[in-house]
Length: 170
Image (cartoon, rainbow, N blue to C red):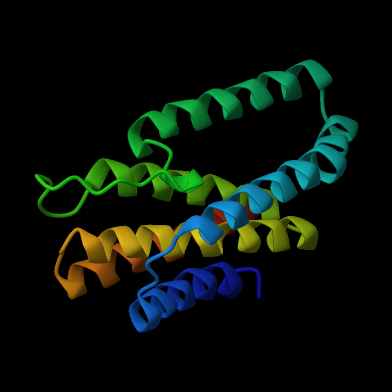
């Protein structure tokens, strides 16, 4: 279930975009803000206390800072797409590789936190749906071929389950 839900969340969100082609994305920005706050609260109140309880606090602090720096680094390439700041430029042709790569790495790392944490799974799902809708809208508006858009969304969909799988088995 932990592998299937994040995958389905992305694909069903993309199908929703293809079916309804929403024009007004203001509600998505509110949902993204809520989902980000929800994930932050889950991280602070559930994940961090457990991490600090079972590990060296100084080492855990270093990993937290590395995670924050990684997120800042990824936002440099995604230009805030995971927060609803996706702007289609008229001169852009084809698939935005850096944008998708940074979002995929973001989704991959999200998968680490959902091992044995159902609440984190729900938080990631709530966060993943609006991001997938925004990325899907961006792909449709960028006029990439539909097969390419499906491939990009499929790769994005598999990243969180892959991150979860690797965190459980390595």
